[in-house]
Image 1 (cartoon, rainbow over the protein chains, first blue to last red):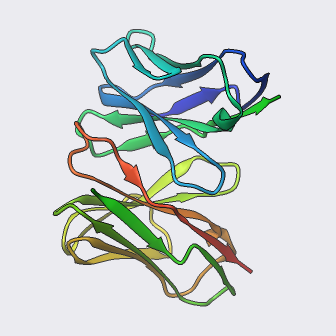
Image 2: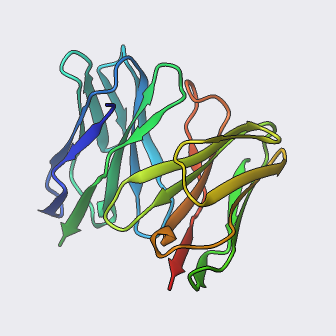
Length: 112
Length: 113
């Protein structure tokens, strides 16, 4: 069964600190893996898209990594800001592009 | 530029009542359109997707249905709402899943009482 597991479920950090969110998946083969940021009550916004052959992709203070051998991805946030408080969702798309498997997300709270 | 609209933003409906949520996309043609539901404490669940007018694929069997009467219009419906239909409904579009980002609408929050 295709699954996407994210950890931790929630995380609280101080402003300015770094953090790393994890995503483990069983989808194989897959087309691409995406990280989304979803603010409360809003639709998700894409942060990064990585194909199976890419190892890392950056978007400002967000850096995603992918290890296709171990089926793990991480999202690293550098120098966190209050506006980073949101839910971060990992999504894996199968090779045919017909199945989208969503993780349940990690809720990040950045406090001052 | 492309934009995606959803309405209403918030809806409170009694159990057993019908439902119609609308999603429209501007600035693109022949998009792939998607309906998702996000229940409290759960991840996004794909409900329906459409690759063209009148073409609907259902991912999860339930009392919801979808229709695509026009190229850039996607409608989510129900004849009789259940309590379990409560959630945050998101519409999204993309041109090519393998190459493009999927863009989400602002969502509709549905509460069934």
